[in-house]
Length: 465
Image 1 (cartoon, helix red, strand yellow):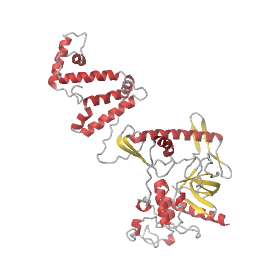
Image 2 (cartoon, rainbow, N blue to C red; image 1 turned 180 degrees about the horizontal axis):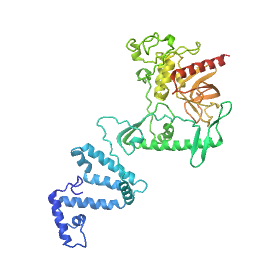
Image 3 (cartoon, one colour; image 1 turned 135 degrees about the vertical axis):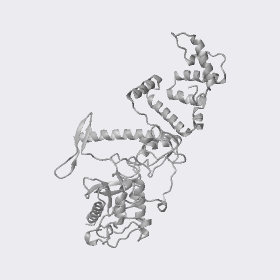
Image 4 (cartoon, one colour; image 1 turned 90 degrees about the vertical axis):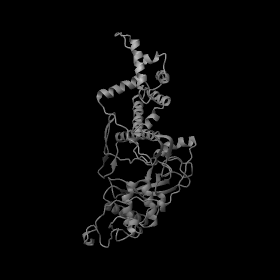
């Protein structure tokens, strides 16, 4: 350690110290004198020995009451260890390894802050032969893009956590298994209606609670990666982790900065390269091109606004009247890309098929069981998130992610369209009748377009009939 970058003691000094230890040993074999004992008893210590003795004494005293990682940081502060590493050949690599050492020690001492416990855990790792992953070397002048799981144990001066409003997609599995409670099944009756037994609802609630707790733990990991500055961003006013953080941010007086969204300046997501073939009677001789179609080279407009080559039967005039180049569709496509790009392929396909554009003001809104919207009513029932929704006579038609019943339409009754999933209902919130149009956004895009077109036409016929 004396020769390491902590103290950089030269060979001549170490030789003199070894000679002093031999004098203290005096040829006795029953008692071994350590180098630390020799350094502590050296009467004519030079500047290097005196400095090393002073620092090591302070660290010994500190180790009796502080965690091992704190002692390591104190050693760095007293000796300038990390500064010496930075000046050596391969300094960046050495500093990264030192940071990895600190992170490992923090994990070993977790829950105890005791050096004996940390040593016992480290010995267990060595005996088990478990490899310890070497930390990655961060690129200079670059942005590191990582998942929250991959960022554990790392730290940066500035960290940005984006998409705070994003929610994990909830799925209703046919079977739920809980080690403490048992097994439950999601059933269907003879009419195809879904039935959830009481045990299934209990297991689903327990699973939702576990997932929420895990999301909070991951959020804590993400927020604590920042050393100097933390940037939080969201594409919506509420939802997801933003609802968890908002009370604390308001209590701390952290201001919100609203950046106006300009559609024309956005980079729309590139639609998938899938091409849905037209019927054989309408197909041109050239493979992959429908009759009357053109490639990007033939039509420069397609370079600026790519669209799916899609042939779809659009119903009566109530569903037609849009295209990917339509300004209304441009705004909706941009919002879908920002809020949940998993729906982007279907949105692009609907625009390319000529389906009329959804109502952009309904994107990102919450559909809640209708209560009196007087500013004081509170609705505590589960809310449904709306992304693609159309206004129709007497209400709205909203797409619902449902792979089990694609193409079906459900009259959901009266709902309140709100900016928030819960809490007081604002006076400006609308109360409308809701028809849920069930589609699978990840299924065959042509089939999903037909489901949407047919569903819209069905609701329009009901409303006018």
